[in-house]
Image (cartoon, rainbow, N blue to C red; front, side, top):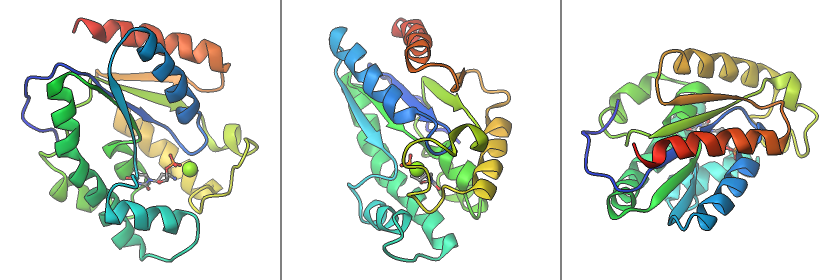
Length: 200
Ligand code: NYM
Ligand code: MG
Protein backbone atom coordinates (compact mmCIF):
# COMPACT_ATOMS: atom_id res chain seq x y z
CA UNK A 1 0.00 0.00 0.00
CA UNK A 2 2.84 2.39 0.81
CA UNK A 3 5.22 4.53 -1.28
CA UNK A 4 8.83 3.64 -1.65
CA UNK A 5 10.69 4.83 1.47
CA UNK A 6 12.37 8.22 1.18
CA UNK A 7 14.57 10.28 3.42
CA UNK A 8 12.23 12.02 5.86
CA UNK A 9 13.24 14.50 8.50
CA UNK A 10 9.70 15.14 9.71
CA UNK A 11 7.25 12.61 11.10
CA UNK A 12 3.81 11.65 9.83
CA UNK A 13 1.22 11.14 12.56
CA UNK A 14 -2.32 10.12 11.64
CA UNK A 15 -5.41 10.12 13.83
CA UNK A 16 -8.23 7.72 13.13
CA UNK A 17 -11.51 6.77 14.76
CA UNK A 18 -15.26 6.95 14.20
CA UNK A 19 -17.04 10.31 14.13
CA UNK A 20 -16.85 12.38 17.35
CA UNK A 21 -14.15 10.08 18.72
CA UNK A 22 -12.12 13.02 20.01
CA UNK A 23 -9.48 13.21 17.26
CA UNK A 24 -9.74 16.92 16.69
CA UNK A 25 -9.45 17.84 20.39
CA UNK A 26 -6.36 15.65 20.72
CA UNK A 27 -4.83 17.17 17.60
CA UNK A 28 -5.28 20.62 19.13
CA UNK A 29 -3.53 19.53 22.31
CA UNK A 30 -0.77 17.82 20.35
CA UNK A 31 -0.14 20.97 18.35
CA UNK A 32 0.47 22.95 21.56
CA UNK A 33 2.95 20.27 22.59
CA UNK A 34 4.79 20.54 19.27
CA UNK A 35 4.95 24.33 19.58
CA UNK A 36 6.54 24.00 23.01
CA UNK A 37 9.07 21.53 21.58
CA UNK A 38 9.80 23.91 18.71
CA UNK A 39 8.82 21.37 16.07
CA UNK A 40 7.42 22.77 12.80
CA UNK A 41 4.19 21.04 11.85
CA UNK A 42 1.10 21.29 9.68
CA UNK A 43 -2.32 19.77 10.24
CA UNK A 44 -4.13 18.26 7.28
CA UNK A 45 -7.76 17.36 7.80
CA UNK A 46 -9.15 14.85 5.31
CA UNK A 47 -11.35 15.55 3.42
CA UNK A 48 -9.51 18.83 2.76
CA UNK A 49 -10.75 22.12 1.42
CA UNK A 50 -7.65 22.35 -0.78
CA UNK A 51 -8.91 20.26 -3.69
CA UNK A 52 -12.05 20.23 -5.82
CA UNK A 53 -13.16 16.74 -4.71
CA UNK A 54 -12.45 17.62 -1.07
CA UNK A 55 -14.68 20.70 -1.24
CA UNK A 56 -17.46 18.71 -2.92
CA UNK A 57 -17.28 16.02 -0.23
CA UNK A 58 -17.55 18.62 2.52
CA UNK A 59 -20.78 19.93 0.99
CA UNK A 60 -22.06 16.37 0.64
CA UNK A 61 -21.34 15.53 4.29
CA UNK A 62 -23.32 18.57 5.41
CA UNK A 63 -26.24 17.41 3.27
CA UNK A 64 -25.97 20.38 0.90
CA UNK A 65 -25.52 18.31 -2.25
CA UNK A 66 -25.95 14.66 -3.20
CA UNK A 67 -23.10 12.60 -4.63
CA UNK A 68 -23.45 8.97 -5.67
CA UNK A 69 -21.85 6.73 -2.98
CA UNK A 70 -19.36 5.12 -5.36
CA UNK A 71 -18.31 8.47 -6.69
CA UNK A 72 -17.89 9.96 -3.24
CA UNK A 73 -15.36 7.26 -2.36
CA UNK A 74 -13.41 8.14 -5.48
CA UNK A 75 -13.50 11.77 -4.39
CA UNK A 76 -12.03 10.90 -0.97
CA UNK A 77 -9.27 8.96 -2.73
CA UNK A 78 -8.64 11.66 -5.24
CA UNK A 79 -8.45 14.34 -2.50
CA UNK A 80 -5.69 12.29 -0.84
CA UNK A 81 -3.86 11.54 -4.07
CA UNK A 82 -3.62 15.26 -4.72
CA UNK A 83 -2.19 15.84 -1.24
CA UNK A 84 0.40 13.05 -1.04
CA UNK A 85 3.04 15.01 -2.95
CA UNK A 86 2.69 17.88 -0.51
CA UNK A 87 2.92 15.54 2.51
CA UNK A 88 6.10 14.04 1.11
CA UNK A 89 7.60 17.46 0.44
CA UNK A 90 6.86 18.65 3.99
CA UNK A 91 8.35 15.51 5.56
CA UNK A 92 11.50 15.82 3.47
CA UNK A 93 12.06 19.41 4.54
CA UNK A 94 11.61 18.48 8.23
CA UNK A 95 8.04 19.56 8.91
CA UNK A 96 5.85 17.17 10.87
CA UNK A 97 2.49 16.36 9.31
CA UNK A 98 -0.50 15.61 11.51
CA UNK A 99 -3.40 14.07 9.61
CA UNK A 100 -6.94 14.16 10.90
CA UNK A 101 -7.96 10.92 9.10
CA UNK A 102 -5.99 9.16 6.38
CA UNK A 103 -6.22 6.25 3.97
CA UNK A 104 -7.57 4.00 6.77
CA UNK A 105 -10.75 6.08 6.97
CA UNK A 106 -11.11 5.63 3.25
CA UNK A 107 -11.06 1.87 3.69
CA UNK A 108 -13.12 1.67 6.90
CA UNK A 109 -15.86 4.07 5.77
CA UNK A 110 -15.76 3.07 2.11
CA UNK A 111 -18.94 2.24 0.27
CA UNK A 112 -16.83 0.36 -2.28
CA UNK A 113 -13.56 -0.68 -0.66
CA UNK A 114 -12.39 -2.14 -3.95
CA UNK A 115 -11.25 1.13 -5.45
CA UNK A 116 -8.60 1.60 -2.93
CA UNK A 117 -6.29 -1.16 -3.62
CA UNK A 118 -6.09 -0.10 -7.21
CA UNK A 119 -5.98 3.68 -7.20
CA UNK A 120 -4.06 4.47 -4.03
CA UNK A 121 -1.82 1.46 -4.06
CA UNK A 122 1.84 2.43 -3.85
CA UNK A 123 0.98 6.10 -3.39
CA UNK A 124 0.37 6.32 0.34
CA UNK A 125 3.10 7.90 2.47
CA UNK A 126 3.73 5.49 5.34
CA UNK A 127 2.83 6.99 8.73
CA UNK A 128 5.33 6.96 11.61
CA UNK A 129 2.45 6.60 14.02
CA UNK A 130 -1.30 6.08 13.77
CA UNK A 131 -3.34 6.95 16.83
CA UNK A 132 -6.64 5.08 16.86
CA UNK A 133 -9.20 6.61 19.17
CA UNK A 134 -11.04 3.52 20.31
CA UNK A 135 -14.69 4.38 20.94
CA UNK A 136 -17.88 2.89 19.59
CA UNK A 137 -21.21 4.31 18.50
CA UNK A 138 -22.72 3.94 21.98
CA UNK A 139 -19.90 6.04 23.46
CA UNK A 140 -20.29 8.96 21.05
CA UNK A 141 -23.99 9.12 20.23
CA UNK A 142 -24.62 11.72 22.93
CA UNK A 143 -21.49 13.79 22.29
CA UNK A 144 -21.88 17.40 21.22
CA UNK A 145 -22.94 17.92 17.58
CA UNK A 146 -23.39 14.21 16.91
CA UNK A 147 -25.68 13.71 13.91
CA UNK A 148 -24.83 16.95 12.14
CA UNK A 149 -22.96 15.06 9.45
CA UNK A 150 -24.75 12.54 7.25
CA UNK A 151 -22.44 9.59 8.07
CA UNK A 152 -23.07 9.92 11.80
CA UNK A 153 -25.59 7.15 12.31
CA UNK A 154 -25.67 3.82 14.12
CA UNK A 155 -25.39 1.26 11.30
CA UNK A 156 -22.59 2.96 9.49
CA UNK A 157 -20.52 3.67 12.58
CA UNK A 158 -20.88 0.11 13.88
CA UNK A 159 -19.60 -1.19 10.55
CA UNK A 160 -16.79 1.37 10.39
CA UNK A 161 -15.64 0.53 13.93
CA UNK A 162 -15.35 -3.18 13.06
CA UNK A 163 -13.47 -2.34 9.89
CA UNK A 164 -10.98 -0.22 11.81
CA UNK A 165 -10.28 -3.01 14.29
CA UNK A 166 -9.67 -5.47 11.49
CA UNK A 167 -7.43 -3.03 9.69
CA UNK A 168 -5.29 -2.28 12.73
CA UNK A 169 -5.01 -5.87 13.99
CA UNK A 170 -1.39 -6.50 13.14
CA UNK A 171 0.23 -3.19 12.27
CA UNK A 172 3.21 -2.18 14.35
CA UNK A 173 2.88 1.60 14.07
CA UNK A 174 -0.67 1.70 15.47
CA UNK A 175 -1.39 2.92 18.98
CA UNK A 176 -4.89 2.08 20.18
CA UNK A 177 -6.11 4.57 22.76
CA UNK A 178 -9.15 4.05 24.98
CA UNK A 179 -11.15 7.08 23.87
CA UNK A 180 -13.53 6.87 26.83
CA UNK A 181 -10.84 8.13 29.16
CA UNK A 182 -10.55 11.79 30.10
CA UNK A 183 -9.13 14.25 27.62
CA UNK A 184 -6.00 14.94 29.73
CA UNK A 185 -5.27 11.28 30.38
CA UNK A 186 -5.50 10.57 26.65
CA UNK A 187 -3.22 13.46 25.71
CA UNK A 188 -0.58 12.25 28.15
CA UNK A 189 -0.66 8.80 26.54
CA UNK A 190 -0.30 10.37 23.11
CA UNK A 191 2.65 12.50 24.24
CA UNK A 192 4.44 9.38 25.43
CA UNK A 193 3.99 7.81 22.01
CA UNK A 194 5.27 10.95 20.33
CA UNK A 195 8.40 10.93 22.48
CA UNK A 196 9.00 7.40 21.24
CA UNK A 197 9.22 8.52 17.62
CA UNK A 198 11.54 11.52 18.04
CA UNK A 199 14.67 9.49 17.64
CA UNK A 200 13.34 6.74 15.40
N1 NYM B 1 -14.55 9.82 5.44
C1 NYM B 1 -13.34 10.41 5.56
C2 NYM B 1 -14.76 8.81 4.51
O1 NYM B 1 -15.86 8.29 4.39
N2 NYM B 1 -13.73 8.41 3.73
C3 NYM B 1 -12.49 8.97 3.81
O2 NYM B 1 -11.58 8.58 3.07
C4 NYM B 1 -12.29 10.03 4.77
C5 NYM B 1 -10.95 10.70 4.89
O3 NYM B 1 -15.72 11.70 6.17
N3 NYM B 1 -17.61 10.76 8.71
C6 NYM B 1 -15.66 10.30 6.26
C7 NYM B 1 -15.53 10.03 7.71
C8 NYM B 1 -16.27 11.17 8.39
C9 NYM B 1 -16.27 12.28 7.34
O4 NYM B 1 -14.56 13.43 8.63
C10 NYM B 1 -15.51 13.55 7.67
P1 NYM B 1 -14.71 14.12 10.13
O5 NYM B 1 -13.43 13.72 10.78
O6 NYM B 1 -15.91 13.51 10.75
O7 NYM B 1 -14.87 15.58 9.95
MG1 MG C 1 -17.76 13.61 11.45
